[in-house]
Length: 166
Image 1: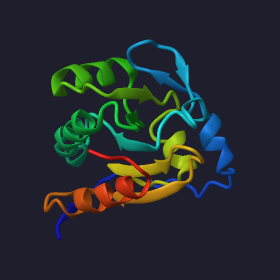
Image 2: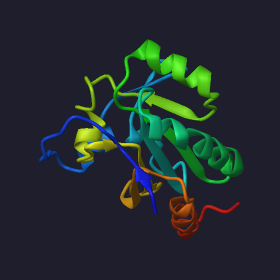
Image 3: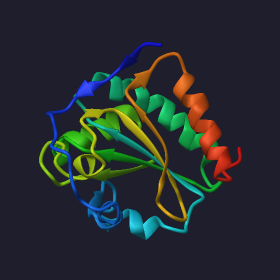
Image 4: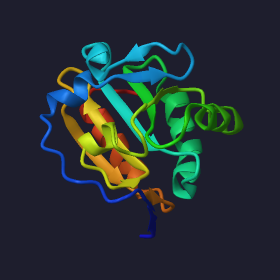
């Protein structure tokens, strides 16, 4: 199985508590409003997070698959959310438009992977996290882009186990 990952600068292991990820402030790419994972708690059965950046080739390959997933499960208990963890605001907006991203994208204002990605102890992108919508606990994690489609099948199993139905 070939998996491609864009390396982000080596990040120090964070000692932040898991709860700090729930209250970390991100900026919605459409509304410019502050959003936290805590504000999503209990509204969805699962939260599917795609951490990406415009310059990351494997991230860009993954985006069409995330769009398909969003389209399939829209309104069925799944929140699909992109976390732009590296780009500047304008570059992120260009990427959303160029890729036709139709799911919520949240901007991390911290410089170059030093915010939410570091809190989740991620050192490369793309990364997919599936969180339980009730507890915000990580129920699945996939690093890199898997062209074989194996990650997608695994992710569907986790989503179904959380009650998300097609």
